[in-house]
Image (cartoon, rainbow, N blue to C red):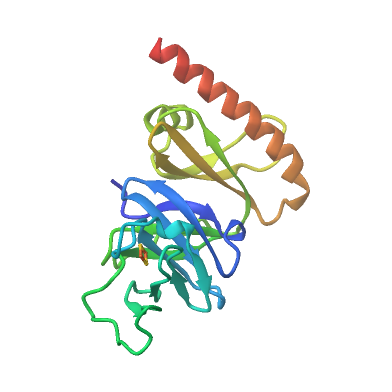
Length: 207
Ligand code: FES
């Protein structure tokens, strides 16, 4: 398993919102505080197991939608609304994993990972798209493992793609060279064709 895996393009997670993500680390709640800082937890509240990705963000804390327990970016529970005068014990923690934003992509890694993700360079987020094929088939079609570039017909510049293993499907998080903003529509069309080709090949291989 790679140390860092992409879960979203940065503009797709607005400040003060949370989203679910499926990765090799399991189901995650990825969220962004009002200041813009990103965090990710295993998608299970330590209280009664509610999905934290259903919660809402208040300032720099994620609040569980069920009983409102609030967690800071490191996962520490900071507030239990039913006991407003209680300082929550240190043992009450959401399962935080490493989470960072680099190159227009939000990445997660096992807790304690100290390296940084690979920097995709001078690129901008284009779009994320799901492909109905397992990551092995997508890797084989694109000829790289985690992140790489592809040159598609009709495009002046290659696109950078980071792959997220989401089980039955694979998410492609696509970046376009910052020098080629005019190519966004053509790139989006070319990606639809790429998606169809990969899905067709995967289906044939599985048959
Ligand atoms: S299940 Fe999350 S606060 Fe109760």
